[in-house]
Length: 220
Image 1: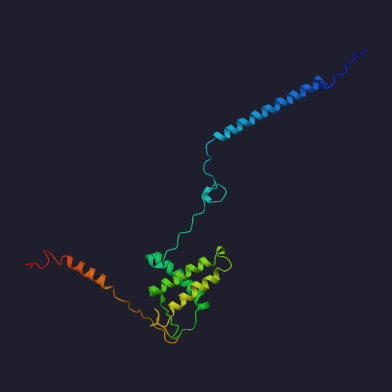
Image 2: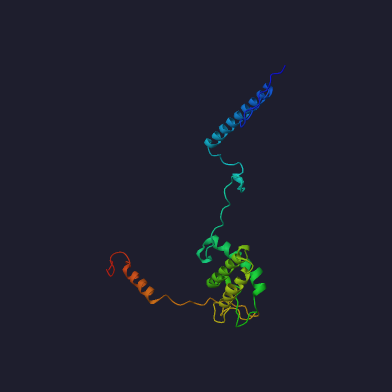
């Protein structure tokens, strides 16, 4: 006969009895979970103590996001009159292409006495400086980050003033071509150095020896 089951005391939970085979399976699962947790902890410790990774094989290609160096920043533009030699000639060639291929066909008004021009404008340093500054401003204001009004700002604040200064009746090209039928080129002389500079130059010349021996000493 089965043993009588005593009723539980009021308020006391009856313990759950798990058959032995089920209990062994639960214990095995718990052990596996603990082993996996310990293995993951070891992996995290290893990663934390690992040295920084070496250079990426993609670094030589400069590929972003693959360990390569960031793209080199473009060099800061310099005023063209500060350049020398081949660097100046290359910049002047690029400027001439922009003036001949874009600026004059679009904005080049008729040549008159009120708006002179020069076919050798590259020999006028002041004109070169004006046009180069205008070209740099154009490159800046046509970029997307200049906004939708970028080119309007370029027309209003740069193009109008530069063209008015370059092609003014009394401007740097006033002695050059005033009619398409009469091409001319002439460099107008600028003002002489200031009196202060002339005085300093004269004093420097007097302080230099005029020849072998002392100044004013007769030589045989």
